[in-house]
Image (tube, rainbow, N blue to C red; front, top):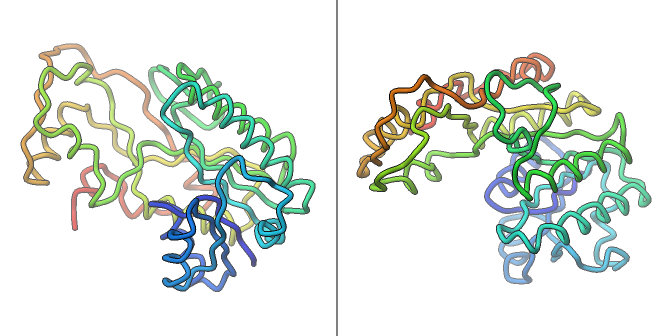
Length: 272
């Protein structure tokens, strides 16, 4: 199958390499010519593309000739750019539909549930509290509207790997609040395997979650994680309340995709 990946960065590149090893034909995008050359030197077919570029450009023909399109572009961190980001993403989805793309996978986020508390399922109503969350919901709706049973939404919890872990950014920080809030993390390798399953088993037309099975508190986990990673631990504000916050439940997703997590616990993500 020919697969196009918009955004071959920290997640997209290893995803492209994994899909190629499985026998798929993959074309991926990067924003600069130098980055495109690096991908091509690694044996990955690549095209220079940045969100907002002319979608009618002949250089994008290989993308729209694909059978499945994976949208893996996170929004910018600056709020003023988010509206434009949403508009350009919806235009990309629309063009993919008119150009004959069969399936679309949109990499979304569990942040669409905002500050919800308790167990969160794939059918739980969204309640975004940030501009980014709102834009993600709008893009999700565009994918569902245009692709229906051939569109797939994959909402990810906090994405980590052994060498990219939030405990490092929290290391040494003091007076951190919300220590009793639950942790929701997922390992990059499990995300890649899930996307493989969606494609190989033709499991489109669904909204999926992906998150580890365990949800320790932030204080418990990040202090333990800092010790395991041999970095200074963070210090949290003393809090004797009960654990709170959302717990992302991925049972439906795991059962539907017949997927066993390689990292079922956040503590497993500290090994290796």
